[in-house]
Image 1: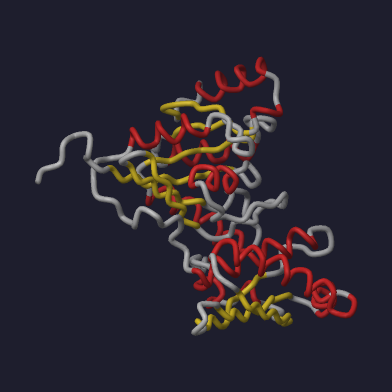
Image 2: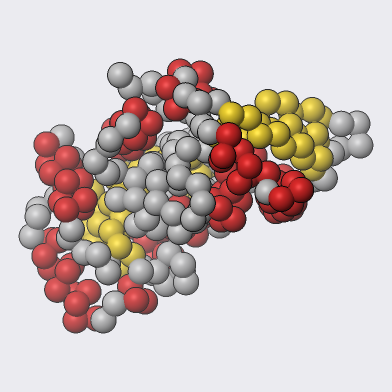
Length: 303
């Protein structure tokens, strides 16, 4: 039986780009309605291009949450920025998220220049509007509109949800007619192994953001399905120096135990099953130069 226009399905790929800490992961989680991306107050926490999947009536929105775009200094930085621009190329709709408090700063100007160079239009989303006066917000919107790269401007608070529904409805309306790419109840395209690693990495950042630089990554080495429906997950936390290993483990193993407990509880909520989590800390001095690590994180190794 032929579909009526009301039944016609749509599917749109949407790239969320922006400077580090603009709130992309928070917005992604709000648009999807589930936690699929790491949210911390540390910049550059999103390393991989996480796909979140949201539904709006008859439209499936596939979101690519890209790493923040910034001036790269290390190989890992270059791989992250490369992934962000590639995410924008892969999508039909590009959304530039800007922290309204920071406004049109050097990092945002750099991204706008990149959009102009590639002749790409974007939807501008001014985030954190609950933290800025209305007059300043309207002046910023006018200034951004004058750059000529934005088709639409939305003002939201990803944290409170203010304005998110309107943005989602607009993205759905802009999506092309076509079949859904994923089952209706699926919210993410990342493998569960990678999501588990990201959850543990988030807990490390939350507990040790002052003591540890960005020299930690988590690898899920083993994922064992058990007959009772539970899962055994063994992970390695890679650090670059012995001193960092001591920080992660903590006195008498207290910090590692706390991180493990927080990560396990989060995994059980996300995976809706009992999780047996085993964490080990390993000194891997040059993990950020290891090609296989990049592959596991879904990043291209950039020379």
